[in-house]
Picture (spheres, one colour):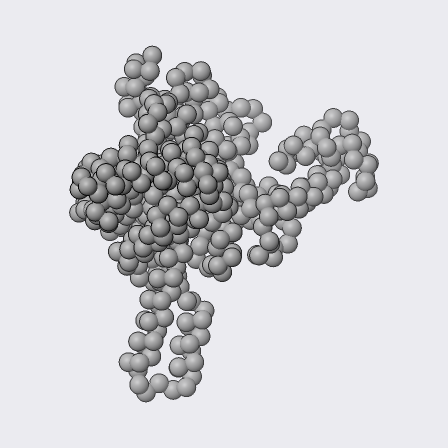
Length: 137
Length: 311
């Protein structure tokens, strides 16, 4: 979701700091990407709002719009969750609202506060595909 | 080709087996050994996909359909399950294939009332309390009405979880309840975590029941209890005839009329017939390592509750 927003961020002229790049910047780029990052976050917020409306959730938890798409999960749940493949603990990444397994280099998305722990849905966090290529969606 | 792969598959570890299931379609091999979808024979991957679609289609109308098909009796079955569980406050429950949250809500109600009774009894037995102590006790009840009980609802289908979450909001359940999208054959929980594992009307839809039972064993604490509520086999011949008649003539029609979906409910009744009977399921539960495995027939075997302990 967040990666998909990048190409859209590049041509958008608003939100100050014009786009100085023609192609989509890499996520961990240099200074120019910082402004792209600001636009990205703006897109992310917009996307989050769309997602929330689409999901029909009436915002019962009343949480502020987080930096990532969707609401963070309940802290009590994070205690229990491990990676279904390796059964190792996960790290909650607030910026992308994902649960990350560092060892295997995969990230599980959290949508609407519900973590998606199906291996096929996990995203690879590595730049190059891992040797096995089996955890990639 | 599939035959040659099967022994290899058996040799792979549990996790390896899951990876194999992922790799199979990617490499263009046969997507798993043959299994059944209702009365059809399909590959495992196809079955998983078809079942996902069934529940995606019925999610919105799931509760309504349950009420009309079982004439509301499914509520009694679920009540009996939770009463059998008899959870005390502080219990950690994982409800797998819990979709719309029926078991989870009943669990929360149960522990809340047990907790209330506990606190009332405590008050009654201490006659010479000062006013501060009494009010402290009431505050205790307010701040911790569930007594630290928790239930995690795990389901493989996003639509069912969404429906469940909405229902929870609507009915006012928030504390002690969490939702996870996960596969019963590969639970995203660590070992020895939960006091009770329940799967109500879900194990029938799992592709590899043995894997699901192994996972159930894994995530339960020592002393933990496994409870499975599922349609089963009716031995009484007359009742069996009537049940068949009702299942095959009435239920798909209800499905079409109420949910606009004949096929899903056709699948439902066929899958019930294909599911192993009481003794066979009991043997499977024992194979997973559970002890003191037993089952209780409800309504002469239309439904059965299987119970086992991790000891």
